[in-house]
Length: 233
Image: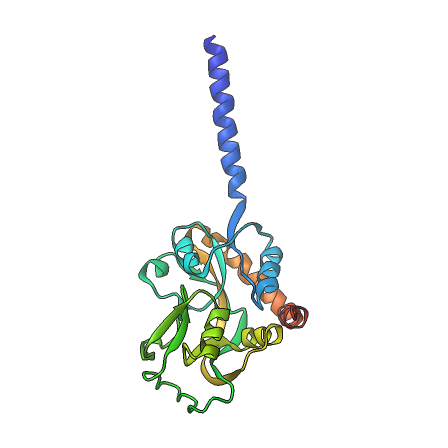
């Protein structure tokens, strides 16, 4: 009886440890929702040889999920967008993936003057929940919305005067759902990167290597262009 009990416990403990080890092979990766860079992100993960377990979060939840370690890798952001103290304690940034410009988005043909960069105190700015913005301390009144599409709609309806978007994301959205909006002045220029949680920092070299390979082969530029062309309608 004692031998059978010992054998059962040994088998149980071994099985649990084995399952735990197996689970460690799968890295929790944040899904990049409906973005120009969706296919780029998956290509990086595949090139890096990472066995990913993808998780989807709302914009508002994604940052907390990363801090809590529910996500080991996410994309795409820059250090200036992730400045909370708890984020800085756990995040490591990869090499740059893509260079982009962040623009003011304004109503097309509206009569008010295009805002001068840095002088936004008199304007209502639509901001996406969970997003941080460079120089956001210069904003006047802000109106919080759930998605970038909501931000565009608020500008169109007059509930906000301006919002902000990456140039390619704006172009793609306009091709899919044209709105009476215009690409305004450049607010900032960004080098988009991925983040690695400190619990998975050992993966940083292979992710960087994957990024460099895909950039050198032209794959990243190809996938970005393909995503804009193929996601119309």
